[in-house]
Length: 347
Image 1 (tube, rainbow, N blue to C red):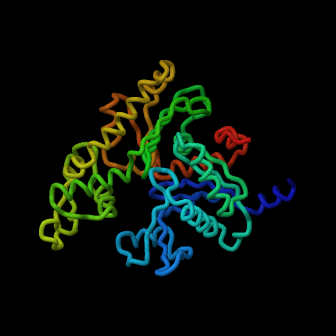
Image 2 (image 1 turned 90 degrees about the vertical axis):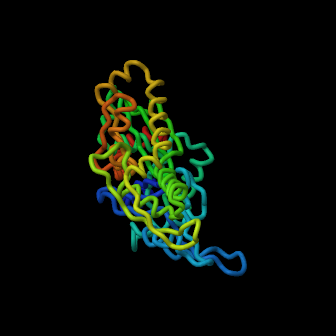
Image 3 (image 1 turned 45 degrees about the vertical axis):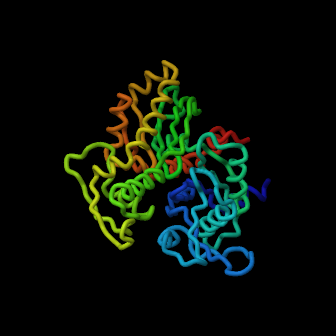
């Protein structure tokens, strides 16, 4: 016990927002130190079944997506908020831990990791074992809606209802929080990645132009909107013409992107309505008064707050620094071990 406390004194406790699209690492008393794509680039052996060699992780690896030769593969080890490739997830977490600790990589940190609500016990075990294998001394798991609410500075310990919608890369997490617990939660696998692919498919169908998923994401970020804008934005995209096979370019507008994303945005709105319909009357009155808070990368889509507000007829606000809310929430939980144990159901 004394040795464990001594190790804890020298190691840096960490909070990890292990996202489908991006991984954020927060170190206690230092803030967010890593914010990189959840991508690993590996070199496969041409002959034999040896272990793949890691070439790059994070931003550098994402640059390789769609541009690698046959023996190099850019892998996204997380899919729809859960581990799709256990080995690569473990190696990615290990890379981020060692990068954070630098020369002090022999010191094993205590780690809290945010996970989607409704993860199965098998999936939770996979996340925990990945972190332990990667060098964690102790691992806590916290549901993303709770972490997002803490990071958005909502008064989660008070006897008042707070509703948060966290739109990440793989999942959209909706949570109603009161007295430090999740009263109602819903997780759907409709989020940023599906919005990106909806743009890719729309451009393919309407303009016969094949573009990559990275381009779809760039279009969403640069000109995407959930409602009609006072002035349409536009962007030129380049790709391969399906008919001629030649390279071509087209100009897309925010109207195009809105049309492409509308079905998936409706799915998010419908999930929110479903949660509101399940809400006890006393909590419902709190939500009417306090409104709904948006976090995650999806919260940055232009006009999404207005779109959801018009759909559910309640005030909707975007949190300060929505991309960082979940990571900040893990950091706040790390500051107080009793709160950490309460929120993660750990003993």
